[in-house]
Image (cartoon, rainbow, N blue to C red; front, side, top):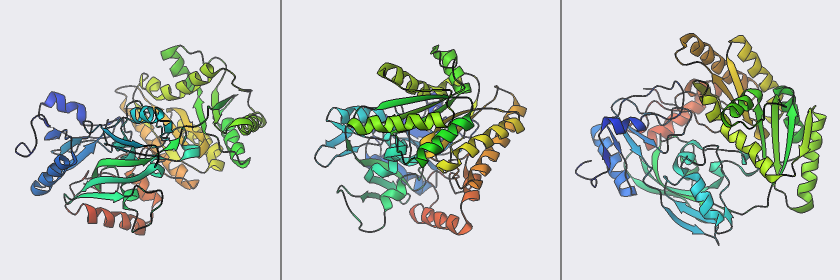
Length: 452
């Protein structure tokens, strides 16, 4: 690689390389890489992959490192390939409503550039100010507005990638429609670096949307808030966001930012609608009625945009606020909307059974729950109890017809859960795809479905 890459691409200083060895997944193991590489072009990426193939060296690709499953963690002796320098927005086409970007482009930077042209890129993970489009694609990231607008996969039209054989390929299309061949671009989305290294992405855009109306409700328990979520689904409403924040998260945000949110509420449910004109007003009123009928202790339509934005800011601040209390093991299960109340009740029972503090935030409108298991630094017994609760929550989600991960990915932490969720025949299909695109087994080994 020294011979084939320009100067400055290799990071061999152990102190600098240490910043590239793991993501934000608490307790996910990681090793020491031989070297970190920061390529700037697809040809440079191809050169790195081919060098790894020739020498049988594992290759782990990472974006900004904001993942929560261990998917970007280094394995011992690997090459870590960081896409952070591939951060160019190559094109924004207002006629075709698409953008072409490098994998290192930060999510919020793309959204801001699109907004200048009256366009909108919907996927909005809570890490949007820091996470990159390449990482979002690799994990099929979601976010607050996915209840109405879908996840990252719904916006990827095409991409360029280097496969595990060192071939640079272009997959997908730029047209609004296209059904030629298998959906190989879609296959890459959510593959967590196990099938190829993504070097360019073409994403679908939407017109800039109307201003949202916000409905807030306070509830005495997460189960009561869950009943409101189920009621909204039963009423046929599709909010543009429907988020849950429990008392532990509210208290942590208050302690950090002094926002005063935990004084009046045990659980806050936040709903939004972006339907235009009278339809939006009507949808907000129907959402408010669902809150009240489910037992909200207080509920109202917000008439103060700053107040409404502050509530949603608290939702985004919940995870970093909890991290200030101790190590946080983050769950990411998704269940049918009708099962949200029961799943929240089971999470509470798991917390009691294993004597573990579990806070809850959730993209409640699409059943994507994020129980946050909190321990104290160095408390080995508490860590073991939290891990047991983590596995119980996975089992309960599957039992209720759900999935082990809604948006964070499988990585290292959810491999056992994936094997419980999928049948042996389907797991064999995954392994066959992996073997076809990465026959040398160098791409992110040991993650998702592979062992090693």
